[in-house]
Image 1: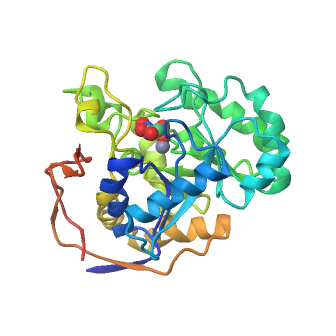
Image 2: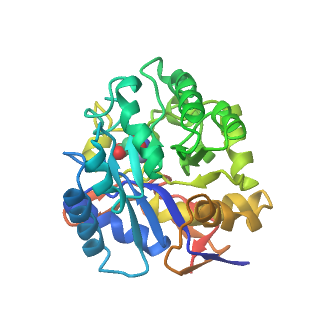
Amino acid sequence: MILELQSPLDMHLHVRDAQMLRLVAPLSADSFAGAVIMPNLVPPVTSVDSVEAYRSRIMQAVGDNEHFKPYMTAFFKNYTESELLALKDHVFGLKLYPAGATTNSEGGVKGMDEAESTIRLMEEMGIPLLVHGESHGFVMDREEEFLSVYRHLAQKYPKLTISMEHITTASAVGLLDEFENLVATVTLQHLFITLDDVAGGMLKPHLFCKPIAKRPEDREALLEAALKAHPKLMFGSDSAPHPIHAKESCGCAAGVFTAPLALPKLAELFAKHDCIANLQAFVSDNACKIYGLTPPKTSVKLEDKPMSIPSSYEGFGQKVIPMDAGETISWSII
Ligand code: NCD
Ligand code: ZN
């Protein structure tokens, strides 16, 4: 069986910088027509100049490929009205991180109150707000505890599009149907794994990410929403490469690298559940409708032919281990 996807989009992607960028960005461009690029570099991307310089480095890394469009984001901080007006035409949205919630988020917001003047301006200017929605509570409860913040923002700023990034709980899926202006992304790994896969047996550093994978019933709810292509749910891989030494270490960095295997794994999953016809909406059409995007016109053909996932991706002095390294899956890109 052959499946042809039109202009697949990755609505949450980390491509890093420098040599790592050169290794991983082309792997996303091989599959996707565009991707929402996360701004958590060191230092974070917060100005028109740094957004545009980063966009150029990405374009250079993908070989100035006109078939790949980076949708740039800036790191949320308190911007003045004139700073935001200047940024508006250069970014897809702002990404808000609670301080310290994940990789390179130390400069994130310390309390939501302090963020609201900027959020109000974003609503007025029509700039989407993308949120890493975790509290500082017990690790399994962090997303659930953050849902009250989403409720508050969705109610108070009804014209603001708020994306709950990489949702991992059944409760977050439920929230999508409560507020018109709430949308969400879900990653590849959270459709497949639970905490048991990460820490139930031998510890699996390459499956460790934030938010941490949750319970079987959470994974089920995410999967059900994805398989039916819930119109407010979009694929965002959250592919987050770290060098092997940062993962296989006594302090393991959070992030799962999935960019090159995302589409074959999704095709395998949707085919297994007899939902292959919904994959186009999940990996592109939903996002285009929600945000009014017109990505480069590309098409990617997938076939139910086995593919071995490499044990590592190496180049430019970098080595990254992907999810499911060394395993064989039943679909591949042709
Ligand atoms: C991401 C990273 O490494 O930048 N890590 C992760 O575990 N998902 C950051 C993020 O999106 O939380
Ligand atoms: Zn991320």
